[in-house]
Amino acid sequence: MAKIHMETENVRTLARLLDQKAGDLDEGVERLKRARSRLAGAWSGGSREKRFMSQYNSLLKQMDTKAHELQVLSMRLYREVDEWERADTKGQQSIKSIKEASAGLFYGLLSPFYLIRGNVKEYSITETWEFLNSTQTGKDLEALAKQHGICFILPDGTKIGDPEGEIINIYFDDTGDYAGYQQDNKIVIDDTLDWTDKGVDSVGAILAHEMQHAIDREAGLLQDYSGFESITDQEQLEEFLEQQTETRIASEVRAYERTENIILGTEYQDDGITSPSEIRRIIVDKDYETIYENQLNQLLYPNYTVDVYLNESTGELEVNLYPFINENFGNYA
Image (cartoon, rainbow, N blue to C red):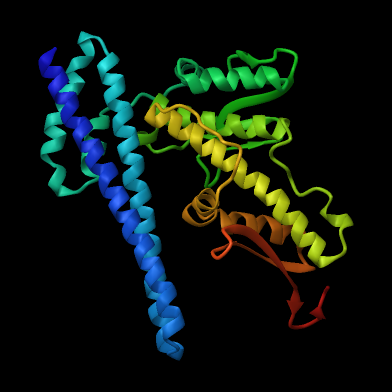
């Protein structure tokens, strides 16, 4: 037992290192962003400035992405250790691979993760729910489903929540560019996930994320954009779209909290307030700005084009509308 404890501690150390480096990188990105703001006000260099700032912004985005990837690897590594510590004697051979994987750390920060995952079983939705329901987050989601009259149904017919409630079917299928999505009466999880993302922790985290969205929608905490057609005043329409988008951001904050609960084994915390840093995380770090703009542009075409962004000075979400101009036919608005 002592040997197993020592090996798992080594892996925890690696997970902490990954998390620390992600934090360091994230802090560096923030410093560079502040420097960018100062530079923008001090240099007006025409085309040269534009080329420089374009390259600068591209680098910042890459660093942001890498910081997030390191944090995800750290979370998954913590989850692996927890699973190994619960394993019986027959599972102890997989723990031995940690030492071998750690030896290759300096060949790249990503390689240990792929080595230690080993052969990952493709879990069914039912097996995923059995794992998720063993966590506090899973129990919370089931209780919320009962409270809000939702009946989640698995492919094998298992019902979760209120048996007489609104039916939401859960299954694997093609999800395009997304790991999963919740829409209408279904939750769909990508059936082409990379083999490294098919453990019950990873799939369970996706399922918990989408279940939270379904619950928010039924509870009235996640609003769509229906009703925008009746608003003719541009300023009022911008205010309406901001309010609706804010509910979507708040739901993403809660859903990503559920994701981290499963990956990290943390407890759910929601103070009911969407802070500027949480808005930034969704709008900027996770690039939902582009997602919301695409959705709204489809709704408002051909009257307006839409700009969704975080106002850095106020920390608030803003939605600006610009009359759509077609070079051949002029202004539609």
